[in-house]
Image 1 (cartoon, rainbow, N blue to C red):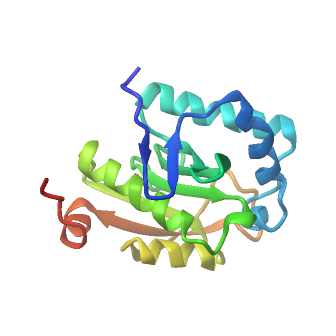
Image 2: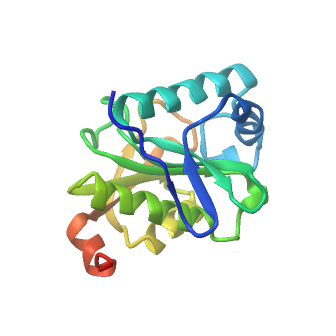
Length: 191
């Protein structure tokens, strides 16, 4: 097990998952608007299983998709972070940045704020040379977020192996950001 990482941004706490997060996480995973770019909404058992996978990833690696809590309300609003994706992906090996926030929290800059914090951890604390992100080609909200983060569209697409053939979200696009590109846009803070 690696040392566990948690961090704060101006408005958010990115922390380990707690048992109390299971119900709100399940509500997020059942939201049809949020899950439109996933193969299907998750029922409670599937959501709880995914919750366990997220926590196991953090326990093993020290980082992962963290629970995102709004500090002002102490409310779980979703998950954002870095993960090592499944080795059956054509972009493997890599570290991916990913996010999933409840629709009530869209349009407030939370995803950008949390993702920037996760990139800082990835590049400045973990020393990763690059971070990728991928989504269904039609997921314009996530693609715009990737651009706001300074990621570049590689122009590459692939069929996600965990999405059934013929499913409308099977085709994915790939975005990329190197540590050098990150540092050029985000020089280290001198204290």
